[in-house]
Image (tube, rainbow, N blue to C red; front, side):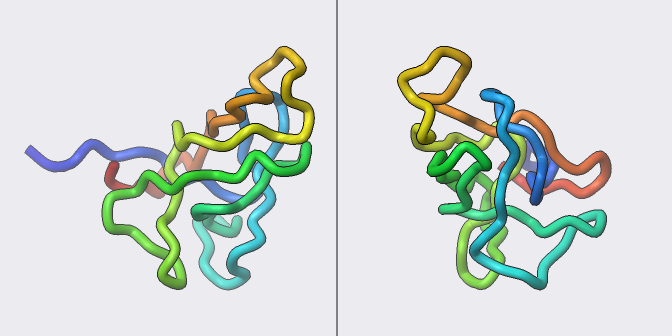
Length: 99
C-alpha cells in the first residue's frame, strides 16, 4: 500500500476563508499550467503563509503543498470565516503529491 495522495495545491487555488493562494517562492514549476505552491506562500487576504505537507516533494528545496495544507493566520484574523487558519481546500484535478 502506497502513501496517501493529495491534489497538488497551486496558484489561485482556494483557501477555506475564501482567499486564493499567491505563489511567491518560485516562477517555473507548474501543474496544469498553474504555479505549484510551497511552504511560505501567502494568500490574497495577506499573510496566511502555507506549511508544506507533501512527503519529500520539493520545488527549489522548499516543501510543496497538497490540498489540506495548514496555514498561519491571514491579515483578516480574528474575523470569522477561517481567517485564523486559512488552510487550503482545493488543488489540481489530476496532479498529486504524497502526504
